[in-house]
Structure formats: C-alpha cells, structure tokens
Length: 399
Image 1 (spheres, rainbow, N blue to C red):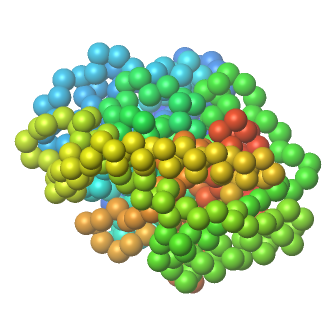
Image 2 (tube, rainbow, N blue to C red; image 1 turned 180 degrees about the vertical axis):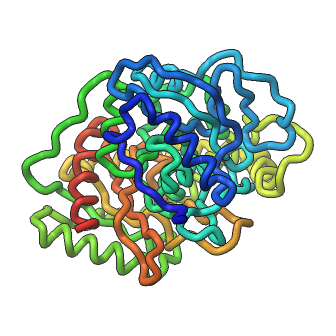
C-alpha cells in the first residue's frame, strides 16, 4: 500500500469524510506516525468546510484535549479548557477536528516520530511534521501548522504538499503555544494550492478569489547567498523560472541581498524564545541550546536586528509593488535522510522575519521522484494575488 495519497478538499465535503479519514489513519499511521491524539467529533454540517476532516498541530489548543507541544515535560498536561481562535474559525466553517498532529518540541528542532510518506527513512521536516505528513499521506485533506522560521514551508516542500504561512497577524494566535511571539504565524496544509486558497477563504467567510486572466508578475531569488542549495533544487528553481517566463509571466530578479535578514531572524527568534519557552525539566538539546543562545543576546544587538529587518522589509515591499510574488526554493533540497534532524529553514528565515506570507507550491521532483518544493513570497496586503499566482505556478509544474 502506498503511503502517499492525494485527498482533494472537494472530495471531503460529505458526511462520510470523517470516517474515511479514520480508516486511512488506521491503515497508514503506524508507518507515518503523524498523530498524537485522535478525537471523536462531529461537524456542524454547514459552512464552506462542512464535514471536512482537519488535523491540528499539537501546540494549538483543542477543547478537551491536552496540548503537549511535543514535550515529555508536558506528558501529563490537562485538557485544554477551550479551542484556539483558529480552531473556532475552522469549526464555524463546518470543519471537523479529528485529532492533534505531531510537532517537534515546542515547535523547534527536536524531532518527533513522524516519517516522510514519500520515504519513511527521511524526515518530513518540522516543526509542523505531523500536519504535513498527514496531508501527504491522504489521512486528512486539511491540517493546521505554525511557522516561526520555516515550519510550514519546509515540511510542505519535503512532503510534496501545498501550504500557506500567513502574514504575521493575519490569523489570530490566541490559544497557540508561543515560541517567539513576534515571529509566530499560523499555516494551512492541503494537497493543492487551490485547496489551501479555498480553506483560507473559508476562515475569512469569503469565496476564494478567481485566478487572474494574465500570468503573474514574479521576482526570482535562488537562495544561494544564504544556503548551500542542492543541484537538483537549483535545477528545479531554474526550470520554474524558465517555464514561467515561457508561459508569459513577467519575470525579473529580486535584486536584494538577504544575508543580514537571515541572521537577524536567528537573533530575534533566540532572544524571544529565551523569554517565552517555559523552564521545564527534560528539554531536548536543540531547544536548550536555543534558549541559552537567546539569553546571551545583548539588548543592543536585538534592537539592531529588529531595526535592520524593518529596513529590509521596506525594501522587499517596495520590490513587491512591481510584482505579485518572489519565486524561491522552499528548502535547500529534498528531505534529508534520517529522523534525527528536520532539515534547515534557512531559505524561509529572510522572508519570515519580515512578516510576509509564504506559499509552498508542490510539483517539482528530483530524479528519484522525491518532492522539491518551491515557494512564493508575497505582499502582506495582497494574499489573494499570492494564492492566485500559486495556483498558476502549480498548474505549470504539474503539466
């Protein structure tokens, strides 16, 4: 039995969808291990997501279910008293919460047990490991994740699914356990960009915007100034640039150096995590190191990082006045082998520190058939244009 399956949102709006999800989980989750807890629940039967099964990352509160944040220290956590704000929005749209998905410890780098459905010997990425893998394995058509560095875009890229990390503040984070509050955002995973767009619109109570009649305007960034991008990923990005141009897109370089933004993201995240992460026994080595690093950040260095990132944000937003999105690699390469690491978020850091929305677009593959996810980064005030560009690009990649 294949561990990879594509479950479209349109095929999940029926009364038997929840039972279908539970059957698929029973069939494949012993191999994928995407779930922490399964719950018995029913939807409202009304709304744009009526009957759609959804998984919720286990740093997001679901009423009556413990939020353990992937930490042994919270193994005995009590049930959450209420739903997180995003869970309330999903339920109001008719979605049915079927369970909590695996997260790395406190949404950082210490991995959980989840495996990549495309190759169980490889990481699914993190920190939204379970959400990405659950969608890639066809266990649910929709899942919620969070991103503080690259925790939505990277696992989506590794698992070959679509995902949107919303702009900072665009979805409420009440009821979400924080890592670095100034950077934490929510994300949605689905099998296609169109499904992500439909789910995102449902949370706002609107219809998904139609795709524009013309190809998008794109800026390109290959990431090589901040990362060792693998030859297959460089080839996939170059092919996408050439393909979009041949299909009529207006394509040009971003033309900005983002090395300082990547470094500033690390400084800000560490400093905020040092204040936010609870002092509990038994933290993993990666989280312990992050907190120690953050405690050592001088106040003037943190202020300088924030000032530089604000200036970089202004420069990128100015560039996006002439384009719909920046086209970039979603990760340095395919999912790394082994389960001791969740991969490197370096290609998300420069954009995420700026508070911009980022969209993982599936479709590219390496010679062995493993996913090579690309990302589009957009203007925070034009999310619909970003999603429309993503639909257009995904169609091109899958052609």
